[in-house]
Image (cartoon, rainbow, N blue to C red; front, side):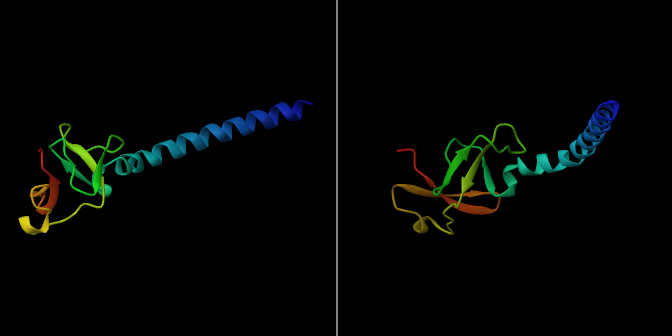
Length: 102
């Protein structure tokens, strides 16, 4: 009967050691996965580019910015966007179509 108690204590010690090892190694991964730069666009405005939506899950480097996730509609000039409904705006050296505030 005493061998059951010893086995449980050893299993508990192994579990604690594994938790300590893996908790320390995954902290860097947590920061990378919650970053908006992993596939989103950080915007200063409340609006997101056409084809994206605002996500509260991901964070930007600046607290005032919001993260937009999706496939944004890119533009090189104003005519690439739908007339009177969208405008071509540059963010981080890329230009995207944003909905107008009409």
